[in-house]
Length: 342
Image (cartoon, rainbow, N blue to C red; front, side, top):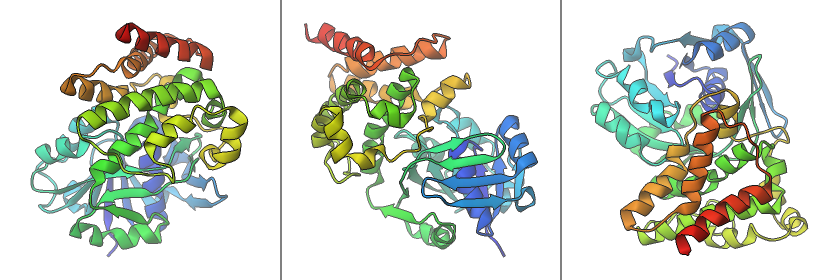
C-alpha cells in the first residue's frame, strides 16, 4: 500500500516536494489556501527545475483540502506553512494523528520543530530544511530555481520514508546536528529581505556589489552574536561563512568569475520574501533577521543592521512600495550601524 503524505501548507515548497512524491506514486494530500488549490486542481502540477527536468502530475494523482483530510491515515506529515502559521496548522491535526507518526518541519527559522513538539507530543517531530528555491508561476507550474537538497535531522524513523523520497528525486541528507544547519541556512536567508527590498531577481541582485555588501553587513553581525552565544553554524558551501562575508565585498567581475555557482539561479527567480510582498502576504522577517535581533538581545549585543532590515520590510508589508538601489540600501544599513557605534 502506498504511503499517505499529508502536506500542511500548499505553498511553493510544499507543492513542489509533495508533487515530486505524488509523481513517485505516494498518496499525497495538500492542505492550503483556496487560490493555490484551485490553480493545481484546474491545471495539475508542472514541476520543472534549473537542470531542465520536467514532471507532469495530473489532478487525479493527489488530493486537495482546505482542512486536513483524515489525518489519522497519514503515514507522514510535512509542515511547510509560513513560520507564523505553524501553531495553527499543527493544532488542526492535534489528537488525530496516530502515535509515533513522523512529522517533519520543512520551514525557515530555528524553532518551528519545538513549537510542533509541544502541540503533538505523541508524534516523532523532526526538523528539516529545504536548501533550494521554488517559484510558482501560476497555471500549476512550480519551478526549482536553484541547486540544493532536503536536509533532515537524523533519526531511525527517517528510514520509513527515505526510500520514497529518494525515488522521487529528493534524497534526504541526514544530519546529526541539524541545528547547526538551520543557523547556516538562516545566514544565507539574510539575503531574502535584501532581495525583497531591491525589487530585482535574485541573480541580478546578487551580481551587484553594494547589495552583496549589505548581505555581508547582515551576516557579519549575525556571526558575531552567534559567536557570543557559542553557536557554530555548519559549513554549507565550500567556503566557510566567515570567509564568505569578506568575499561578498569583492568587485563584481571577480565575484562572477570566482563564485559563478552562487549565481546559478534562474534569471526570473526572486526570494520567497519578495514573492510574499508582491502578493500582499506577511513575510517571515521575524524568523530571519528577527531571530538575529532576539539572539543579540539574549547576549547583550546590538544588532542594528538586522533590526533596520526588519523595520524596512515591516514598512513594505504596511504598504511602502519603495525599491532600494544597492547604494541606497547600503547607506541605510551603514547609518544604522554607525548610530549604535557612535
